[in-house]
Length: 201
Image (tube, rainbow, N blue to C red; front, side):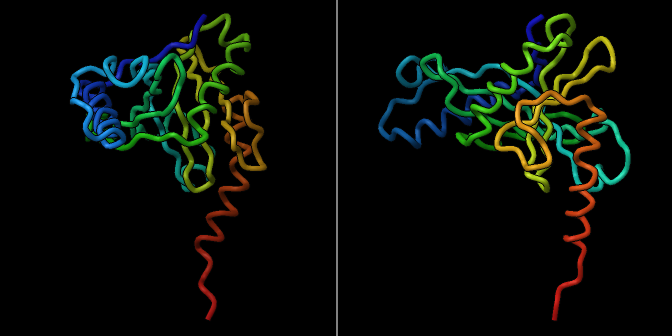
């Protein structure tokens, strides 16, 4: 079955749309303000594929854990223009999941990497034969961003790291939850030890 996308909280769609409009106005001063993303740019810009973003800290990785415990921090949309994905837009949420407001638009490498990870995952039997929901896992301290395909009918979650991936992960390779967390354990401990080391002098 196709990868499913969740339903953002109330106000998320508007916050993301307003944020993208503001960015567009900054790019093109003098353009008349519009109310719809479909009216922006040649071919129109629109928000697609909303997915929640979960962050993991080093302390979350130092002990055996579960992806389901990763805190929800944002909702992310892909921004399409003229049929092509050109950016992503994020709306921050508080610990209860309520919208805090628009965060940012990003045009970096993880935008196209999201589509590449989804394409790689679409061939997996868990995706073809089951029901999975797209989520994003972000581990800022290790420079990791991954597509998390949550199994909606069981515990067979799949994680696909995005490019550019650090050397201890392979971009676009599907990992089980256990494989993914195991691959992160050593680097997380090393990074934590480095961060906690006393400064010389």
